[in-house]
Amino acid sequence: MPSPLLSPRNPSLAVNRRSVLAGLGAVLAAIALGGCSTARGAGSQGASPQDGSQAYSSSTFAFDTYCTFKVYGDEKAPAKLAAACSRYDALFDLYKDDSDIARINAAGGAPTTVDSATVDIVKQALTFCSASDGLFDITIGAVSTLWNFDDGTRPTDEEIAAALPHVGWRTVSVDEGANTVTLADPEAKLDLGAIAKGYIADRLYNLLQNETDAQAAVISLGGNIIYFGEKPGGGTWNTGIRNPNDPGGSKTVGTAHVHGGSVVTSGLYERTFTQDGVTYWHILDPRTGMPVQTDVVSDTIVCASSTQADALSTTLFVAGSEHGVQIADGYDDTAAYFIKQDGSTAESSRWQDMTNFETA
Image (cartoon, rainbow, N blue to C red; front, side):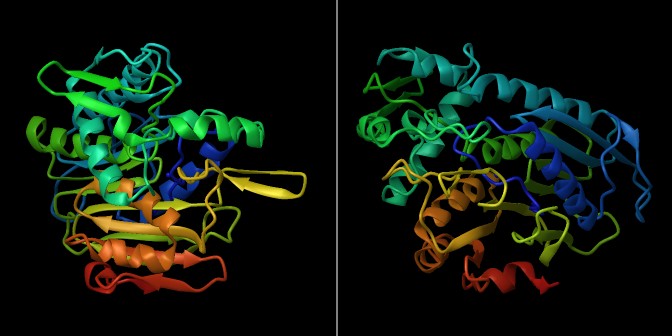
């Protein structure tokens, strides 16, 4: 799930409202760094940037988080973005009984006819599953639905052990011609929470490009940030990276300066609960069904595709910093930054070149 002062990625799309509200302030702080004011009403005017174009801000609630938009040059664009968010929310939320994902999960292994966007996101997600060697798996739903980080529910070891055999992305098949998705294992469950907002951010980017007169924009989907066009007035888009040791979420460890693309962060600091002296966090390891054991407390991914950044933010978290650096370096034009449990940091080889990162 920042400046990302982002809400961290979550295996499911269900989020505690209190955490969402806290995360919203962090996201708005991030947008301020990007040259944007805090969101106001839909279609509300912002200050005119130096190049004379008009800025319009809005926000909406979707994917159980606050989504904010700052668009330069097209007053109607924010409303179009909000409507698109509502559409994708209805398709991808596994907790909505009539969503495409919920219907696939309930189909008992039968092919399910779905929207073309659902076919596309599942197809793209499977490429990251294949490349991750078990670190990223969209059938984590068999286990993630057993956990409830809102009310502090931990499944028993026996429940996890019974669900784990049904976590396996190879049971998923997509028929693009028929617009169907099939789970060969009737007990498997899709959960797109670790990639959905990134995919949607890319879709919103395409909407701005093809269906609006927008000159530039900042889109934040609960922390997944994507920049459209050149920053009005010139210069870079500036994204603060949250200090994971700051409970209020307003402090940053530094600022990434980018000319475009997406910035996505995952972290352990938002959704946790403690039971019998043990703290559990929401990022689950698909190999164990338990909260990931890692040396990382947050990671930030920068690349052109928000879909890729979102998927990698979870993958690298599970991989840990050393292996995560190697994975990031295996992708073209991709950079990663890790804050570790001991307070030290690590970065991939392209991090400084791509972000000109300044520490706070």
